[in-house]
Length: 605
Image 1: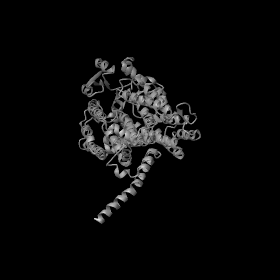
Image 2: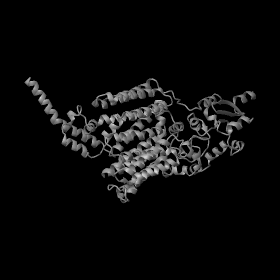
Image 3: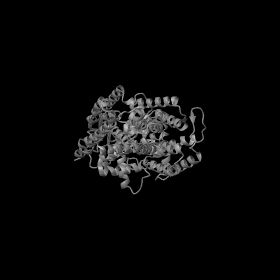
Image 4: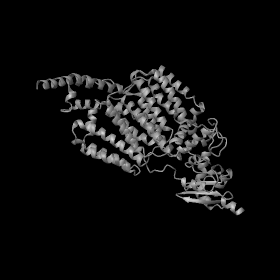
């Protein structure tokens, strides 16, 4: 008995003496990771109640619950990463239409002796152009060659997941509340996930997030000056070669920090004392100079501006039209605007000038073109963590544990599942989570975080396993594939085809080796870029009937025309005796010029 009592006493003493120190190390690790100072509230609790760790399972209070959450930062960091994984998997992953001309461009880079300075894929000879995504096209083509289209989708998923991780680290710089940082990240990534597809913008969003990490670290602590002079030029070189069209946004990202360095504290607005013009201005100059390291020189820097000089294309390209109430991103955009305004008004802290510049500029961009919604969330979402940083983890957990809130979360989740193109795989996430929320309050207090973490692991593994065993059934090919198959059955080789087709079908034609009239690279067919002819406007005029179709066909020697019912040629060619229609399905017709087909060869015999 005595020896047993002695062992118990020693065990108790060992817990009493080691628990606070180990907890301090864990807490210090967490706040080092979040690059935040040690909160006074936690220090006060430790001083007043240093033995709270052994007792937190028996009598959890507000402060103890907060420490329970922060005790395992890796576990909760993994929890939010798993939530990002599930969020990305809950959105249909399918190839974007632009992937076809990217693959064709990557194949051309393998065949041509150097990076082309004139357009190599269409039937228009000698067009000056900039292959703004040449590095992305080269990467996509080789990934597709080895792993097929599935490999490209996996690449997109991994880039999106790493972007989510970096954005979580960015929001952690703005607040000491790990849960608040995670929720802001999930909110932002929910919108960004819709833009994460087989396009070069996935790399731009990741690089912008890394640039924010460098700039915010410098603004918060004054450290990282060398990282600015190294990191920003490297990011600039990558963006200009991966996606030159987004390079101006990198400059727009840096400028608010530079402008704030010249401001003074006025009213609720503040200037960060660490931001210095003599540091940021040379870093900006180096960023611009580094962008010249590309095959096209200064033309790549001005590429996006040249394309925007012709504003009429905004009426044709969906992502370029202004934001409207019918847009898919209108509700989340208005919600973010409301949260930002509420935070600006009610936050007890002063608002940095750069936050106003970033939010105002990208919101204006979103109003002008709805594609800007991704940049608005990326450039402004993390500000929520700063504006609401007084919210503690314990407050968030208590709020999330209310039955009404859990019911609303379950309802929103089921709505997302129902809206996911009818993909039943989402049930692996939706049904178990609803059951977990229903029985959440019946679990012991100390078991709730562990149960939630295990649920996330099992749900993510279940969805991934299901996607491997039973892959998604969405089409990997465009809806015009049947028309192209019919076209292939009437020709000897793709090189013999001189094709007129729609803007959206040209990229797939190029992937098949056909030289089309136009493709989804709108800027290439505009006069300020190609320096020869405004082909894009010509296509719009013939499509809408503003040009007589025979005058248009007299300019080009098309032997095949693939037209959709939105095109005036869809009806005009059906009445023209010089063309033969051999395909008519799903609103797509394919016409053959008489004298070019197999029937004409038989008649000559």
